[in-house]
Length: 136
Image (tube, rainbow, N blue to C red; front, top):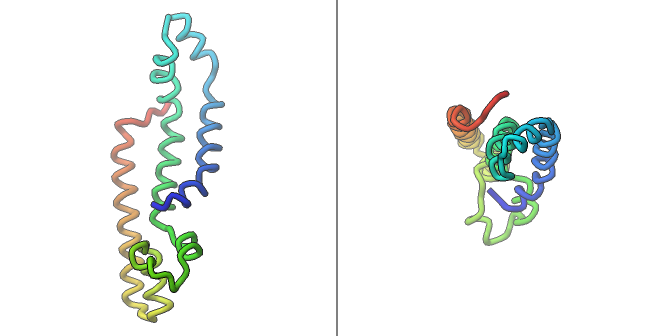
């Protein structure tokens, strides 16, 4: 995934995770402090488990957006940049085949490949989330 795409979506992730942090009741921390929990123990036992659903959502959205990278790459690289061959994304290859090479069948196959890859990665993430996402 391109680092510029990461920085462009950073604000979205900060807003979602900030809202999740704000939604944690201070009573949890007070009770943990009375029980003698350190700041690190409060973070690992209260903060992280209560933020994992939002973290999971941000991760899913970020991965899907990473696979759909096109506009930033196209705007930065341009169509005639010699480095474009080494920095193509699947969506750029789809665009090139469909609209530059006019090979709609191959472009449709690439589109289906993008769909399948995103589906597999998202399915894998949903399977793995059962191990680390805690719904309260």
